[in-house]
Length: 144
Image: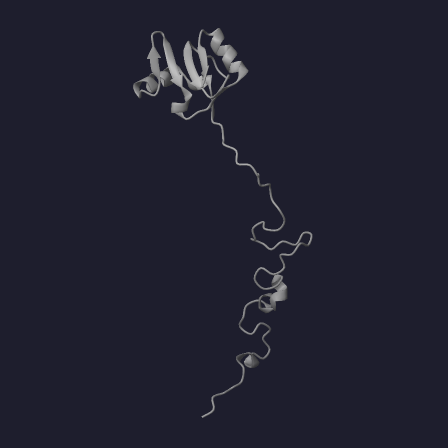
């Protein structure tokens, strides 16, 4: 027995949308700028909504691998912090001086912001301002 082979859309006489929402919705791919990611070509002002920025080049790639130098200022070493570090045995006390090894704290460079005390600091790098300030305060810098 032959079942009715007529298309369903053929029965919607007098209806403009044939059960598929607004008129605009059921057009071809042209109404959405192509199918999928089509239409993302380099045309001025025509970007697909919600697409990540993927066209062109962004930033630069460094050819050399450079290690990041972690730096620290004098103002990190507050009296409270020095007491805490002494208790944790990350720094030591030698007579009237506090001996700080920046390598054990995870830093390589000493910078000069803040006021230093009578400290003996060993570090890999040191700014001129930091060295001058520490020596004026009666401290010492050891470049290791």
